[in-house]
Image 1 (cartoon, helix red, strand yellow):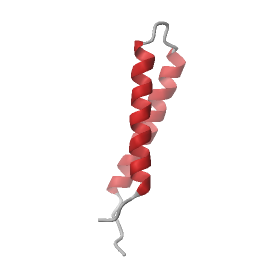
Image 2 (cartoon, rainbow, N blue to C red):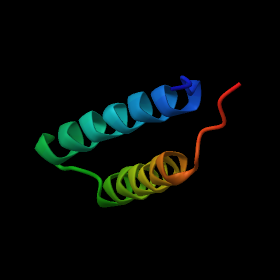
Image 3 (cartoon, rainbow, N blue to C red):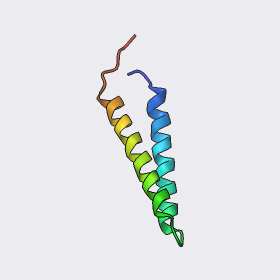
Length: 60
């Protein structure tokens, strides 16, 4: 199996966005627009991850 560096990078980014979203929810006076932006970014990363995992890997 070939290692895909984009898969790791996107997984790390998704994890960071998830943590930022949880911090924003716990914060007093959370900004709803920031929360919406974090959720939108997280969903976009999740879609890109799904597309990467569906794509067949070409072995060299």
